[in-house]
Image (cartoon, rainbow, N blue to C red; front, side, top):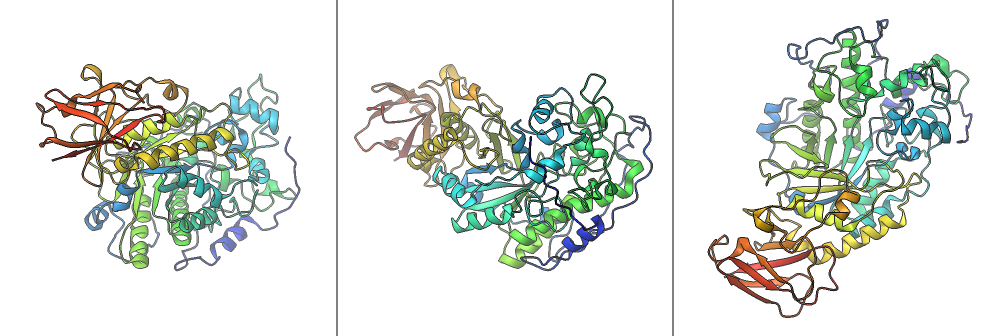
Length: 590
């Protein structure tokens, strides 16, 4: 069981928010105060209220000023003025996802905060065993006691950079609503609870000291329906049947307790289970409620979207990231459908316009970007492919493939395999993408030995083979395989399936390097003396337009035997015993 410290927090919720909002910004003009928390109507019976139609609902325009400049808070203005995705993203190609926060304390993988309130789930059972019953010891107590004393951003940045990463994707706030910085608008943050550290400040300082780009991610848009599990209770067969979990607690309930002055509504939100399907969606593995608007809570929805936006603007103000990232599964946050149910508003456009105008003022140019997850092609945004490998080359917009090793938060039993990461990198880069690999620290902030070994091996490979990775673009073909069929690494989180997937000497991926040469990567390391045939590069196909002049095996300094025949480029492999995972070939033409 975790230790329970009784340290009263004496400020009221209103006073605490006011004190946060009056804090001095590290960079930039002060942001506006957060509007007062609106009154909440009396709850209607559980699952009784159909949500209003989102298609006919108007888009709410937030009363939220933005930094002056050419970017207005509309997609039209953003697309018109944005100069294009900065070249550094294509140069970088490989990033590390720092997806870390107090949910790691549960040792239960992703979404621990929500799932600990789902009876009979693995996280619920883990929470009972390690912390207590969620009616008495809920997620707020996890926040209070979590303290990753071994998290050393400066040390980790060097490890990630040595592995070949050229940028970091740093979690700012997950669905749990806990801000990992000195937040102006959220008192439930890492400088006031738990470790009492400004993690974004530490990460940004470390990244800049090592000359590596970084962005900050925000996952708190759909927290208002995601957190509905905290308003439940055990069923008749649970250890405390019918006893409400701590989502029901109020500000007044905190008097005399360690969390006095902290409003639970700023962590768990409010009870929205009156809307049909909301509780069911929150309690299942994955899937948002049906499309719709929380029409009984219009004032709260507008306040919530404003709060969401101000926290992102606060991070831009303080830490000047190279990109921002919003999670979700719709065209944009607060879209009225998918994960964006509840309201339609221009919150996302306001945040992006403010980000770009502010960057223009600071840097004299807009060399930043915004990831709006699953948004279609829009000049001014970058897309993602979560745990996915696109079928074909995708060059219509810039994108980053997100792949966690194991899961998005720590749990025991991950498969730390460098080959899976390297081959995933080749799959994505050959399709004209980037890759952001999530490496989960342990709850104390350290990396286990298997992870350190994996990262070291990835670094050894990228130092040898990086010429066809960094700054590369897709060729006319992403690759080839036996009998004209691609043998593709399985999608999903990187684990045993990817580590054990078999590739053969016929499995090739192509890129065009920054130097203009074609690079061919064999997805395995064939035996010494193997006659490797790259059928796309025969003289009959004339795919290169010119005869091959030279073939170089990256990392090998001796002579290489090769010939270009009508039906293939044939390479006789030298001693390959020192190579790992995949071979890279530089192919120059006359």
